[in-house]
Length: 245
Image (cartoon, rainbow, N blue to C red; front, side, top):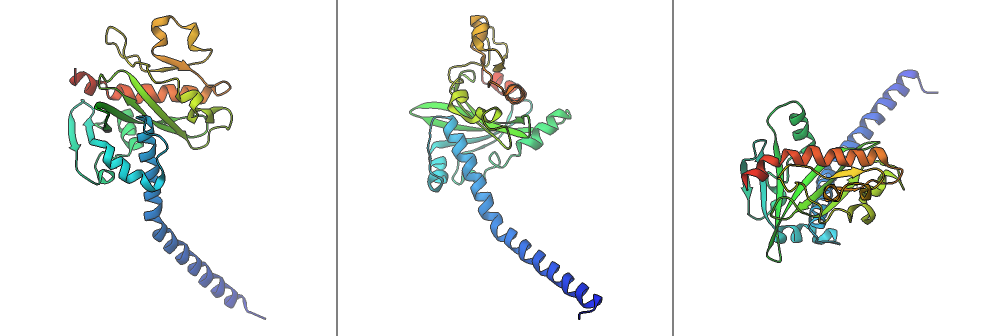
């Protein structure tokens, strides 16, 4: 029969060995995990601009072939970095942590934002990353704008844990396909963002319908989260938009 000291030593050794194995596995798998995250991010950016169904194995190549500029702007709308070289997934813009930068904004501190530019059939398209909060966790996405920095080309949305059949519908064509053609500014140049309206856009005045989409039925909190995300992020780019005018 084993003594308590022996059992304790044996258990301690096993815990240390298992921890070492798990740590080694995590270190070995981290580059693959980072690559998968980068690929998923690239696919979402490309899809927002209209380049859909990019296979994972082709994402890095197609991303680098189509993205012409990786831009970083500060909170005053000034361009602080504009990368046009190869390996755009290693650029400063691609590595910006939007969650951290939006937190800085909430604390009235200086922050930086990323923007990706695609030349698609001779038309420049500007893609802006998005991040916010839904019902159960973070929501995110990308919104692509024409070079008037006003008209929406397309969007993609994602989420961590929204309710299937309800809030999770934000990442379906039924919701996303409402956005192309919507505008961020009214005719006077006032920023309006894009509201997500419970009860339907059809009940709004015709001028306001250009700046709104229908909310997800039964997904009010998630829909509100998307609307808040759009306003919070896009208003942060307003100084840059006005600098281009």
